[in-house]
Length: 491
Picture 1 (spheres, helix red, strand yellow):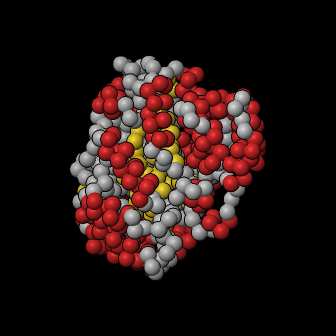
Picture 2 (cartoon, helix red, strand yellow; picture 1 turned 60 degrees about the vertical axis):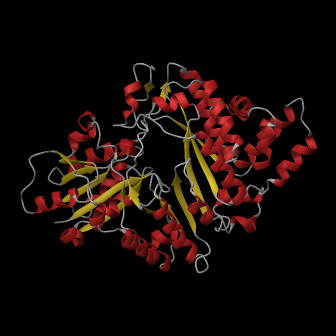
Picture 3 (cartoon, helix red, strand yellow; picture 1 turned 120 degrees about the vertical axis):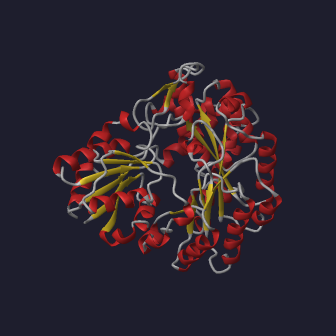
């Protein structure tokens, strides 16, 4: 028996958390299994060569929205070359609308849901010659307290060069219809003591970056304060820590606030999903959010902590037009997050958002990542302009290269509509080059645009661009974007 666990990550730096959980829970078969990680820039035929060189009996392939197209090619190659090998598919992408996907025809088995234990059971059945008669295997929701933690499977190479994913909980109690996590009921917490012990071992091995994949890190203050205390107590011995958490935007009790003020710059990053400020739209997609508390929490984080805030907003939600989105964007800019990720709505397989397709004339791309093309309220041409806006916002406003200069683009007016005008101007100048604009060229474009406006003050513009030049001493100590934001006085 030889088991190969494989997937295609978006980039090398993204270590596969799911594969490590599968391997950790293989029981007696763990010694017969290996993890092989690839990325989406590698050719499927070369990946197949690497996998088959290990002469596997079973291949477990992790399917996600970012690798679905390449995985389809890989699965077809593997089964054409080695039809005798058992190909097992799992992951969020294949767990829903399974029978509608072409890749299913190449699989011997598909595990739907959390496969930590179901995959091990399937491998044992294959090993004993008792293959299940069913191709599609719904996995019972595992008790996370019974799962073996996977953190010892991070190698020294992983620790030195990759993001380490960790989780203190699974699932989400909320029902936001655009998200697959809304299906993961109930929320389950990992036993805190063995979890923290595993993190302690990673720290002793030299780990510095931890990305928590919990959807609602701050939902249970008892657990979240225990985790923050754990890192606070170890900061003197491990001063270069970087911790990423996904936070519920309207929940920040005093116990958390007290601890957040104690972390030094460059240590904490919060991903805060706002998604929409339009309360009618929020109700439509079953999203609960107290916007007044959101604003109060942002003010606290920006004024009294050094937390780096990465806020999310979604364009193309059912019931939201461009003017409503612009108003929400301006409201978010006024709260002064360090970065705003302007996401385009995706119809992930299985997500309840599909129930709005007819009423709101939602038209999505049929291929991954299934982004919205147009809605009843936003036509295709406007959606394309929003896509370009999002890309340019990331290059200019989020990158940290233009922290002072970006403020000149929208001056005292609407951040959205002024940047919208810049976005259209930049697209006209660069034709279809929405990607790959070199930094020096982008700086020239920003300068030219600012100077072209009737109210341009050349000295003010020159001072802003000069102040935005990199400080190498900071960039060596902090994550790149954080270093640039802090250099410009954005904490």
